[in-house]
Image 1 (cartoon, rainbow, N blue to C red):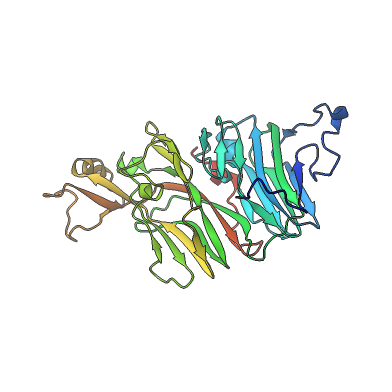
Image 2 (tube, rainbow, N blue to C red; image 1 turned 90 degrees about the vertical axis):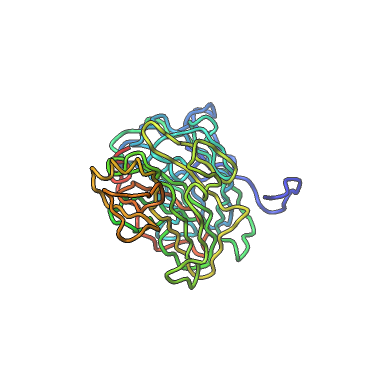
Amino acid sequence: MDDISLIPTGPSTRWACAENVDATPGAGGASRGGRKGTPCLRGFAPGASAVLAHAEGVSGRIRRIWITIFNRSPALLRGLRLRCFWDGAATAAVDVPLADFFAQGLGRMSAFESEWFSSPEGRSFVSTLPMPFRTGMRIELANESDLTEEMVFYQVDYTVGDRIPDHAGYLHAHWRREASGVLAEDYVILPAVAGRGRFLGACFSVIPNTADYGRTWWGEGEVKAFVDGDGALPTLCGTGTEDYIGTAWAQGRFAHRWQGCPIADEERYRYAFYRLHGPDPVLFQQRLRVTIQRIGWLRAEQLLHIRERRPPFRLIGCAEDFDLDRPATWRCGVFERAGDDWASCAWFYLDRPENGLPPLAPAGERIAGL
């Protein structure tokens, strides 16, 4: 963080909002004689899009984004699409559902605070992730849902005239969702990206496959980061899902500076959690790919449901001749799972303003089942 006692020479502050998208000096709050004439975007209908902030021909750094909407339903939390373009790039570096960018998973709001994201009362989105740009930026919001959002309030706080170091990266964010039915097929948090950068972490939404596996624990998978020249095996490998977010022996609700689980819904058996790599950076010089295994844990008495359903199933570390109907002295252990519904938003810095990753999935796929 900057030493707040220092007063730099050169940069100046800008606030972009609905009344002053370009943050033009001396032009804030002009509507209705300066008496709150245009505090928000109104009647943001299906198919509508708007530029939230814009700057050209200038360097700078976005310092804070705050947004709130009136209808905080899953359809809009996942149906509103946030895009950030840096330095005139043709494709967005950030192209994700609104709520997920701010670490709000499952199409649900929750009050929490972390180092870079927060929602003081579960009614707003706040980010303080630094977002540098060298020649300009554009932040857009699009409504890809079937609902009209009556009011979108926002403010983008940034400075212009910053001296951006050569080794400063551009902020990127990538969202994806998948419920694979194949055993031992790991969920990809971040597909391979080329370049030099820093992985900042991710937020996750998990809807376990209770139809096939009952309420067995789903979160034993290890996070793996394949860095630079890694092949079949990664340089960085964790020990389990709840371990990755700093807790252990399953996970309940908590929200800490660098990790948390704002939603641990035992009734519906759904989870939303995040992990931020601040003090423990994940750095790469050429290439990065990040995955997590779909592995669970169960006790012998939980086998009955699995015997009845006969889903894809394989115990890990047991003899090849293990008989599901005759477990003998087997008591508990980890097993390969399939069909769990995973979604994630990964944040990372890259030494270029475009990342070449697949485009964002359609709104229907983002919202289904929420």
